[in-house]
Image (tube, rainbow, N blue to C red; front, side, top):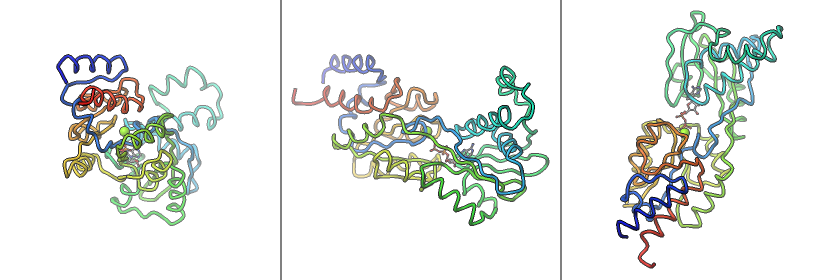
Length: 315
Ligand code: ADP
Ligand code: MG
């Protein structure tokens, strides 16, 4: 293709909301063999919401949610935000005997969450959850790995409950307070409307769709099944996503990565073609070759089509 053709293609991309950062990446896109999708915020809407909160001790629901929300208050993870929103709703609309707290006050309290417990020693553990101390006792909120690494036993009835959530495509979040599992939350994050159509389209184009996620295997398989992806890699720690890309590149295949998060940026950089979701984090956008400004997965196909049309020898 001539430089003019590349310029024209870049313009066509831009008018479709596909920001193309360089002619080289545009040229590589025609040969894409595998497209690796991040799950959360890429295939899914990234709008997690709590669907279940189960307490396994004598503790009241309000107290349980207050504890979990306090632990997650310092988290920037979508799961943390979902928990905080759910708990504050419970506190201000269902759990509180006083009706005077409603309305404007709630918005204010969300920004200055004075209703939460004081937290000390907070740390966010990427790919696992959060930990801190409340009332001088340790609290852990996250996945199995987080609990087992802290040598906290997961009773069979709790494990069974988590498995049930995961089989229905939800993420189970375990809560341990003072070294004992006190409850579980179920979080759902619906697929983007166009996701399964795009996966079907890629397969028709001869491209292999793959899903990679830090989430657990059961939830990952359930979501992959819903969207129509057969090739799944789950329980991948943030640093491992780039390794997944490298494994597909072996044998010279051209690999694209589509992602939105900070933890996707090494994989976006490692891929032959990195595509960032426009609504994603700045770090992901910087690491990518293409930015999908409309946040619509159909534009993965738009980008490959554009490259194929621009660089095809048969014109
Ligand atoms: P993804 O690749 O799907 O974006 P992450 O690597 O961000 O996933 O997280 C992987 C898993 O770690 C989550 O599915 C969840 O179980 C756990 N996790 C991470 N952060 C949190 C948090 N703030 N609260 C609870 N669980 C968390
Ligand atoms: Mg993500």
